[in-house]
Length: 44
Image (cartoon, rainbow, N blue to C red; front, side, top):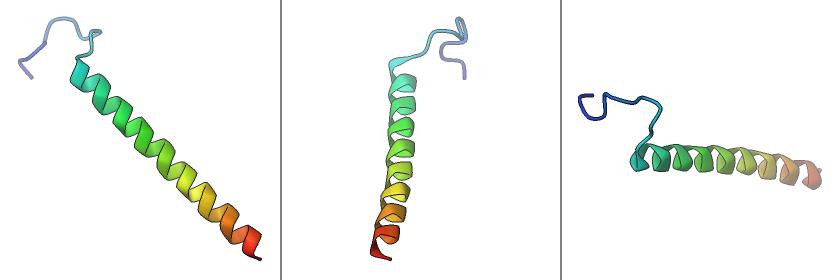
């Protein structure tokens, strides 16, 4: 990655956006699993 070799601490806007999307997807999938589990338990 020749782009932005100097300053590894500084994140670009695209990196932040990607990280945010990954986090949102992770939280959404975890919530989906919990919702499915609660729904299955409440049906018993």
